[in-house]
Image 1: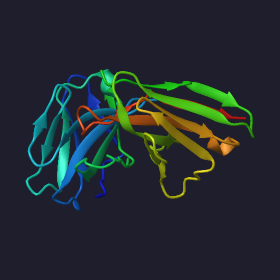
Image 2 (image 1 turned 180 degrees about the vertical axis):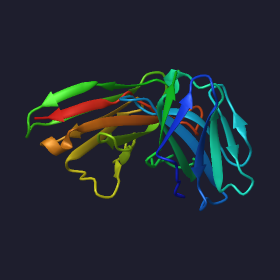
Image 3 (image 1 turned 60 degrees about the horizontal axis):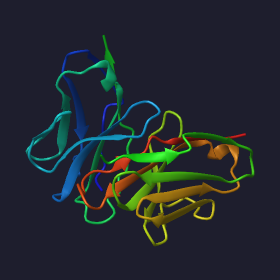
Image 4 (image 1 turned 180 degrees about the horizontal axis):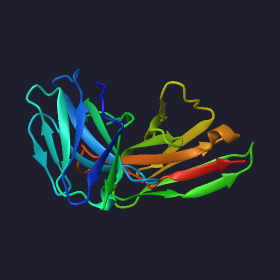
Length: 112
Length: 117
C-alpha cells in the first residue's frame, strides 16, 4: 500500500472549517483513500473514504486532487469534540482482509 | 449498529502471568477481526489478522507464541498475552469487518489498557 504524509499537528478555531491535508504521491490506480480519527484513549472511528471523486457525508468532505497524489479532509464546522488524531490511509479495494496500516497522523486541536 | 466491544477495558497483572482480552461484535457477524497495539503517543500498530475458524496471520515481528489469538465464532475473537512483561504494557485495540454490510469500513473497539507490573 502507498505511503502517506501528513503534518504532525494543526490548530483550528471552533466553528471554523478544519482542512487536513494528506500527501500520497505514490498511490496506484486501485487504491482508496481512507480517513479515520482517534479521540484520546478511544478506538479509531471511520470518517470517510474515496477513490477518485470528492465525497461528502454527515461528518466530513473528502477532496481528492485530479492526479490523486493528495487529498484534503474537511470538517466544515469544527467543534471541540473534533479534537483528535486524524489518520489518512491508502489501501487497495477491500476484497481480501481489509488491512489498515496507520501512519503517524495529524493531531488536530480545536480551540474556543 | 456496528458496535464492537472489548473486555476488560483495563487490566493490571503481574509479570509472568497471562492475560486474555476479548473482542466482540455486538450486532453483526465479523468474519475478520484485527488486533492492534498502541504505545503512548504513538500510532496504532497492526499485530495480527484473525479469521473465524482459521489460524491468525501475524505481522512481521509479532511473536505468535506470545500473543495467542483465537477467533472461535463470528462474533468473538480473543487475544491472550502469555507470560506478560512490563514491556507488554500497552493499549490493545481490536477491529472487525462486517461481512454482511459495508466492506469499506472497519469498526473499532474502545481498547483495553494493559499494565504489567
